[in-house]
Length: 587
Image 1 (spheres, rainbow, N blue to C red):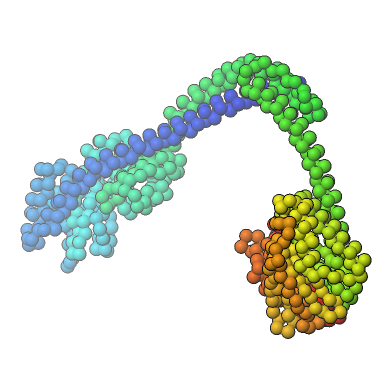
Image 2 (image 1 turned 135 degrees about the vertical axis):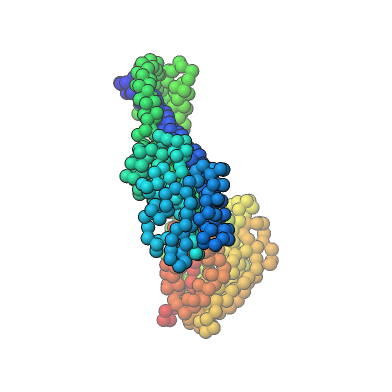
């Protein structure tokens, strides 16, 4: 930053110069566009004016042709009738110089009145005349400044000779030409127009092929304008590109000189601005460097009352916010470390994935939504009986984990009592009531837990279970292939100090060695995203598809098929899943 003045100088100069150059370039572009548009507009106006004069003369030719078509006289009287029509036409419009009729039937021949014979002017054979369709205008050297308009019908062709001397006088010197629909020139207003258009017939052909009545075209180094000439052709004008853009070129040179002068002024102004701005920016830069090294209380002395002062205040404020953020991150790191420890301790409380009790085996899957979960499962082991418990604390996180640890202590307390007595002498209802008292006294009713407890006779294969507001378990019947819901009513743990008597105890037994019991928390039914959530029906369908499989295979299917439904998204709730089965059967 030692050369901040130079940097500001260069930056300001570049900015100002760029703006000046862009403005100049835009001006040149606009000027060039306007110059082109003005030229094209002038050309189009010229072509339209000539077109109107030509149309007036041609209208008279049509009128003469109509009178000839309507003649009903003998062939011997035809020439005198033509002379009468010609004289009448000349009285109205001196452009009409001759009129004739070409008879196709019999021996083809011309009957005419007026100047030079038509047969000597039309350098085409009789076949061409006989096949002529539609009004046609042509010109040749023998006509001088005149043209012939031909109006064909089935049996005759009417010819009218038109003099264009007055028309050429009106457009004399301009680059305008008249072409019939076949691209043959009818008239040029100047030798320059004849030469220019003759060398660029590709542009003329494009214009004649256009379906527009009038328009403009830029092609063959020229700007072209054109207007329709009734149904016989087009009036075309052209001007070379260099001439069209000459006003823009002259003014462009002046704009370039003005740009150079403006850049010089900008250079002087940039030097003054750089010196004024450099000092406070250097101060802010130095303070920023010290803040980056950890000196967050560094003062910034800027006396200006502009954006630099705002920047200095922002940097100072940012330094204090970074300081607080770092302190907050340190505290957050400590809390996360504590949560990680709590989660690790909690995972120690969760039994192994596969636990065997004589002829019974429990296969399990456990996955918390956070570092600390609110799900848990455990067991109490007697000589002939075992109690399996699954709990789900409301919510998940640190508070839920602490309540899980408390209930896990209750499991240890009951296990100590069973060890002393040698057997589990309590039913599932009594065990859940003991847990309820622990949960209520730990939270004073502010948190609660759902739970299911199943006491199984290891040797006989019978069981008794109770549910404290927990979702129903499932019995997988290997004979029917069904997954039957195991319902038992009861209120949640922790709502009141003393649970009501409405806590069912349901008895049952394994009907077959291949049957299984599934205990779980509702987090497994929440797996999935958007419309792909598993839900209760999807979970039951999954269980029915695995009735004949072993517990270990079912657990592996949960891991491989159900957990991926979340598509990498965080779990909405903790997941606990257990399969209880009798040993010694094929998977």
